[in-house]
Image 1: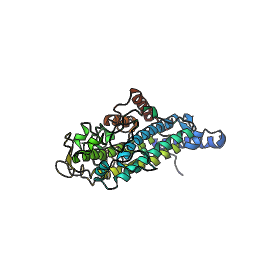
Image 2 (image 1 turned 90 degrees about the vertical axis):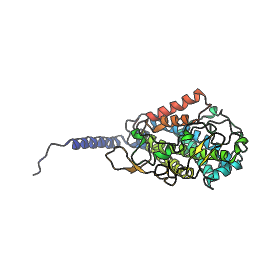
Image 3 (image 1 turned 30 degrees about the vertical axis):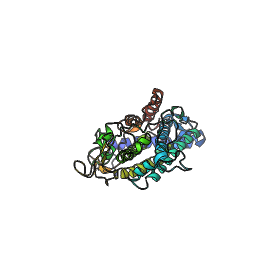
Image 4 (image 1 turned 90 degrees about the horizontal axis):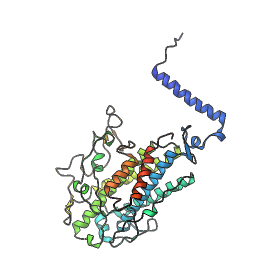
Length: 377
Ligand SMILES: [Fe+2]
């Protein structure tokens, strides 16, 4: 005869969870599909989630609205790059190209113009899709048109229209270069990382020619193209972390699917830009002293800096007791990752120089609301 022993703590937890699941199943059987909230049907788990729009929770809407804003801002900056250094066509119209800047970018890779075009098109489709999805769920889309007030480049090839973002005075944080290479550190543990291009992270430099005077001397326009090359990595690394971070707060499974399907595209951009930035030639800009060092030679070099080490190195994740694992990082909400951290990083980058307080307040509000989203609410 089998003796019934006292249940362990783990068994008690298991019973409670099974009890809750069977309660949910019973609810389904008794109530029938017709009486269930659309949130439960579409999202699965969140029986008690607060539905606000077409089955999405307030948190889902907040996540999507911040991402729509972020994608609109990305589109705005990528369009500026494409007008001058990409391919201007029916997929990504606007501008007529700047041959000198395009040639300097091609030093990083002969396909740079194509990659810039494709990255731009991707961002356009991201915000257009997310806004259309929000509308389909009865939620408000995001429109930042009233904030298109920043000046365009005066260089040959650029359109003369109001912009949302500034690319002509950037302070580019290049610690993303070392963040994914460390085998012992993780930004989610509070760790910090050295800059690949220290002088880019301290001054204010253009990533596009401001006017045709910026097209020479050669090392000046090459420094501008190099700055763009590292800025591309900075922007897309941010997107790579933003999506998996915010996905943890999503409730509706279809919203989760949207985030999990768009986020990795940001990572595919990032991987490309990480590779191309490594081809930026070492030089000193004679007009402002900006230095691009040889990252493969002392005092640089080694796994933290060598230019072909473009795939993430394994590192500590969740707890130091686990074995090292190759992961995207950061992914912790409201710490080093997330919407507020993204806005902070973009502000420090100089992207919003010249923007109004009203714009900054709106973007920050959207970010705080997105970070506050929690699964089930
Ligand atoms: Fe995007």
